Length: 364
Image 1 (cartoon, rainbow, N blue to C red):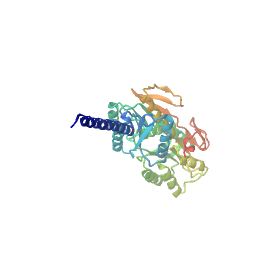
Image 2 (image 1 turned 60 degrees about the vertical axis):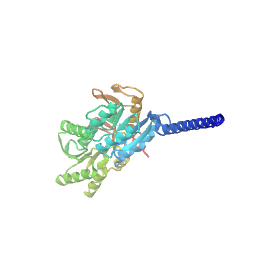
Image 3 (image 1 turned 45 degrees about the horizontal axis):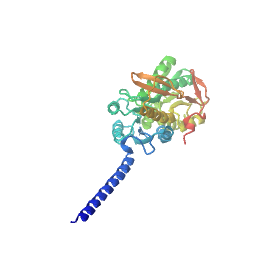
Image 4 (image 1 turned 135 degrees about the vertical axis):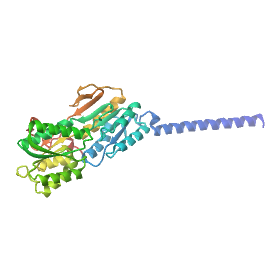
């Protein structure tokens, strides 16, 4: 080869190498963009957080699922979502998936509040903040718990039924799952209130595992054994359809003015409950704030990512942060009693079902 041909060959290699480097740079930029640069920021620059939906077989949780992306846009975060379908093992697996996707925080609602502890320990080791919604873990640390005062749910139901039954009679409590802090809180508070304030009322407690079919079956047995039952406390709207169907079959679905009427109190505040209160088919509910669960779960996750901290005391959104145990804070959101007349029962005020402040009147 001549010197000129050598130079041409070397130049060609140099150009090829430069082109390859440039191509690699372009590809790397594209790959980094697709994987959010590995820094937990999305295409908009907002932090990416994971949200595990606990289930999608109830109106309440479907409402929460509908609110979540809307609130993410409002708060300024991007979300990746999973659904654990009321299975704590699936929740643990979903968490691993979200971590592998580079999320900077995780919101979850573990239905088994004891079994979630190992997963929380793993996330704490990885320095990934967690906010739990609706439920509070029995063990393990999270940045914040976002829920309403579930003991107050049981107490409000107790005072309403106690007043309606004039302090005497029989009621059935369709419990949730006692493996959940919510089921325990509502059950214990209802029983303690009845014992202290309305000792002449007999309470039949029935565990249902948040299952409508089980609730209906157990209520049917109790009504057969005790046809003089005059009250039902459903710890969640999961039992609404079955309870109404059963009362209708027994010719007990009659207006509150009818002596045969069975007074029914629910929990959740879904649109159907508000409608049934207006129709006189059920009598009360406690409105659990699905919209605020979605909003403040993401609010606290973003705050954790931004390095903010909180202390017990009143908030700027009509709630109170309490310290449940050392290192564990809970923001207890407002959850009003809803009744047909908006009256006061055992010193517990209520609002009417058409009140525009209720999320059940604003959900699409």
